[in-house]
Image (cartoon, rainbow, N blue to C red):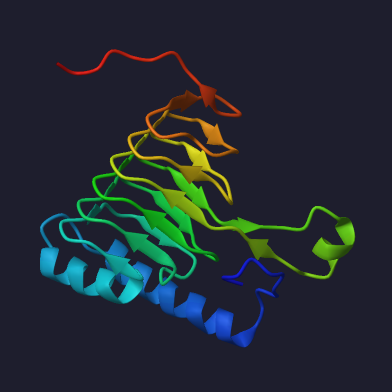
Length: 181
């Protein structure tokens, strides 16, 4: 699965791993702001690795959690979905708006593959200091470069170069915005 090869999601080991993640998600999503020790303990079991000072608001949704790597000071707002059948890596100081979906899970394009119950995935890599606006969707196989901005509601179907601002469906580069002094 992690390699991007076809797999069957009903495999008993995968079902057990998703059940584990769902149990941890339930516990995490029952916490509130200020439950720092409890949240940190649950996230250390749920997420593959996380740098210091990450803040993931609840609710948070994952497939497995173990295939997610967060850099330092990553922020995820309410309702983020991280479908991690393949690795998801998010760089330091990246800020992710509410209801963003980062999807590595995919399905065969041919009907016979879907009918056979096969799935596959492609990793998603998000660089350092990226800002992803609310409701954006990052599709399987996408790499977002450092310092990029993804506009709210964008559907990102291809790689985003470092420092680029994209928006729309499908996401396309936008004119440069003014920078802070």
